[in-house]
Length: 252
Length: 312
Image 1: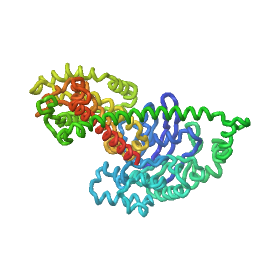
Image 2: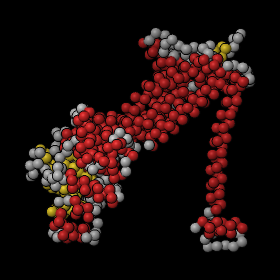
Image 3: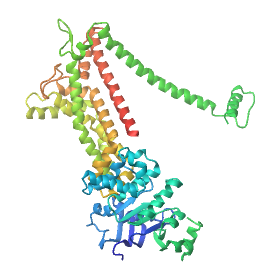
Image 4: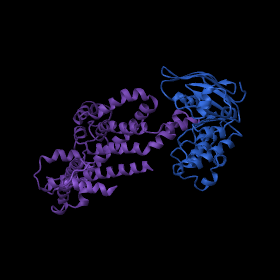
């Protein structure tokens, strides 16, 4: 078990009676990008969402097993999900900026965690936008609606927003699949940058993207992890035949 | 692509040749177009006729009978049968506005909170049980509301406050109950239509449920929520029967909420049977109807404006 990472132990997720995740154990090291790949419906998104207890918000979903972070099992009813989600940020497939200004989108999180000082907020906003490589494009229109940004910019804004609350881990659910190639490249570049500070778990359907951005890759199939290894190994010399079949496009 | 299609049509219509790709749907298309066009025509003519009739009568008060517009809108005395007839409709206008605004003020927070509960706190129970119950409330005839108002609200007000219990307060309480379903239903639909991603985005930043509702859910859906309130107000403004039963119907601006007052609608319904068509009194009632109609247009425009803002 990592001292300062995130690790899932024998995680199971049930939709009603149906078991969607069948006992998955994975370790996510700090400052590493882990890609979760697999065919649609294999449970990789469900697994991702269970890491910050986002599945709690859906009726009829039950999660068993352990998720360890900072020496604490965070999949425990006694854990405050609000504090937990501050430590584990999330970015979705479709950019979901709030219907507020660019500035307010970033300041939203920090405000709730006690940052009231205007100067401090300004600094956080600038810092996050710089980290998300969005500062130059938006510095002159911070107080305009975030909805006026392009899809790619909105997605980078959502990433900036998630790092504004100083998380340790960022979960990304197909963050670039709704974006054009140029925006995708920018988001991937951003992921490589963010890796310096955060541990990132990314779900992707794009094999090339997984190969480009990740250090480790887990191949999900039918709610289980078939293979988990260093990305290079998975894509050049996988141990399992199913992995090989999937990444070479023979099924999935 | 366009050219051959047009040619086909001609051939079929003239019947000179039959072709494999002849359009068999021409008649069907035509019937459909004509039928739907007729339907819309009936609607447009009806609305146009109503507007024309109400305006011609309502304006006759000023142009034929010589009542001044200022005198009608600003006059405090309504004595059409007096020695010197007076047509001051301000008490009615005041009554209509005060009851509907107060009703909206009471119903809006209730309806919005109910909608928040039904969509955010207990979505399952809310959708299956609460929403149908509230929609049922919308189907209750207004006379029933008036009757309940008369036998419950008025006595309670009489017991607590000075006066007879009838008046603006009783009227607006009854109206607020009547418009509650409108506001709640529209608010519920708006909240339920909010993309899940926005809420999750807020949760993912460590915001609590209340912070999310207060800072994200409500502000994002605000234009739709206000649309519901405005529609509720317009319903309250146009409601005659229920208010008439509990407001007392005296043509004065009351000094308190518990004093007999009157509204535009109740003035029209109570007086209309006692006037002769074409008389000044009758025309003056049409002028009141014209005020109601114009207010309805204003409400419609406000709703349109809010909807446009919502799209941005």
